Image (cartoon, rainbow, N blue to C red; front, side, top):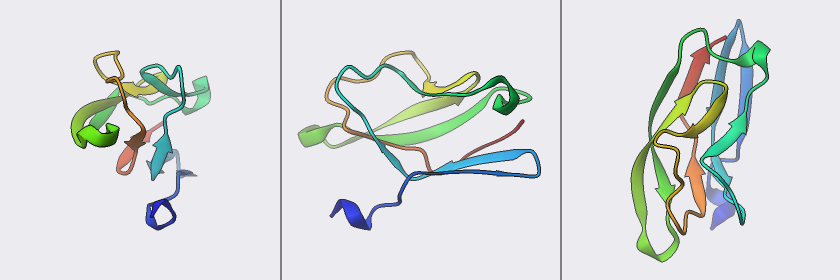
Length: 93
């Protein structure tokens, strides 16, 4: 059940940002998952591989980058994406 999944959480501590949990992708969503204000943008760009839930197709791995946005690296969100796991994203700001 979705209530058993990690809830979305954004944490700031000692100039280190971290994100965890799943974000549900809405209709008309783009590859830019979250826009970051200038004060929270990373000192150097980073990212990690994560899972995207594609409905009945299952999961695929995709690189998520952190710059001025948290976004799907190649700039495209695969058709049918329902959830994006953001767990493990961390950066210094």
